[in-house]
Every structure is written in structure tokens, then in C-alpha cells.
Image 1 (cartoon, rainbow, N blue to C red):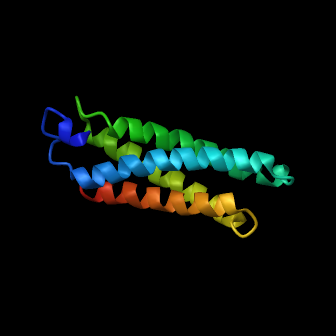
Image 2 (image 1 turned 135 degrees about the vertical axis):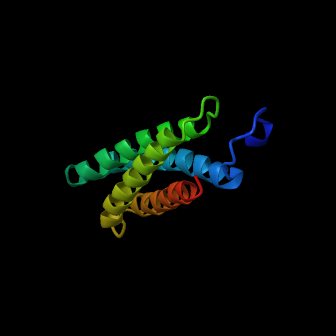
Length: 128
């Protein structure tokens, strides 16, 4: 889709942008699924912070992926801010899920996906 955009993307590395968009949408889905899986666990009360962090991260990743998909009227400072917020949310969620990873496979998967999304956000930030 990026290649079909009728205007120049302003020198943004298209591969890093595409990777980041995909990572954000994947992370939003995985975090949502992890929160849902946490709600199905017998020890749901102990997973309250994990659920909250999952849902916050999912919302931020979804918003980031959507914002990165728009290029008309591009604002570099806003893009940097949203990428920083997304990387921060992914780090927090990855750290929280990692605490439960040995006990819950869904948390291990989520932690890995959050780390990849954080890395993709930081890689795109590095070339803006």
C-alpha cells in the first residue's frame, strides 16, 4: 500500500515504516488476545495489572499503526511522539507479561511480540 501512495513519503524508510505498521497491528491483536486469555485464567485477580497493561498497549499500538498509515499532512513531531509512546507501552507490557511467561504461554507470546513492536518503533524513530 505504501508504494501505491501518490505522493513522496518525505524520505521515510518505507521498509522500516511498513515493518512498524505491521508490528503495531500484530501487537494490538496479541495484547487483546492475551488480556482475554488472562481473564480466563483461574488466578485472574493476580493478573489484573497484566490485563490492564495488555489493553493499554493494544489501544496505543492500534492508534500508532493507524496514524503511521496516514501521510497526508504528515507531522514529524507528532509521529515521533506517538512512536515513543508506543515503544514505552510495549516495553511496559512486555515487562509485565514476562513476569507471567513461565506460567502462562499467552503471556510469553505477548512479551515476545511486545519486544518486537518496541524494536520496530525504535528502529523507525532512529531514521526519522
